Image (cartoon, rainbow, N blue to C red):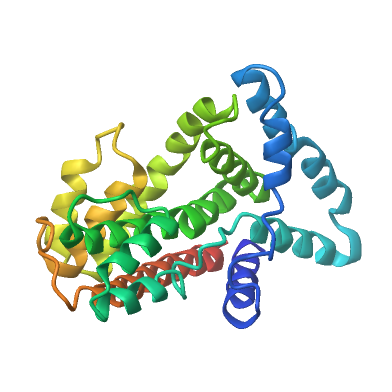
Length: 274
């Protein structure tokens, strides 16, 4: 059923208006409320306590209607864990349009809205946006899929709860949530780097991954971004920005889609093996 759930979620994201998951971030209100309960560890436990009723619900519907309710609930919970950025769709379209027409000021403002840290020189902006695109793809798609495969829907929901809490620095639970979120994306980031090597410049990407793989402090998004640049350019050195650099984002999206398809083929093969 695991592969079927992932396939249904992919079809929903591809062919329905819910390309970015549900219209509203369904887990955010709970994180905002529970994340203020007591100290940092107590607030973190309050956030993760949502997993208990969800687990009871999954247990309660098991076997009903020949498993149809379980299938629907798995799909619904996994959609909750999808981010709202649409990195493989329109996330960077406005930025690309501004950059390609030479309006670097507008491109910088759009990049900041996308979550890119402000840069001192406009020439470094495309690389920063590319890194943000890869990091968001990792957090919105690859990590939830990995923990769903390993622990089921509760694993994916736990990841999303921790990520949302980590992105809210005003919450007492933000610091421990960030530490746990970093730990949970450590393995998926390296597996993504390996899949990028398979669909890009293999030798250079694999060498880049090998050099970075043991660095615990390195954020998963940064590791994946470096591997993506190596897979696209065949070089571990950051490229020099040009007027055509906006097209690199299109190539990056295609690279991430090929990496997703690599995961899909492996999951399908493992599902056939039982």
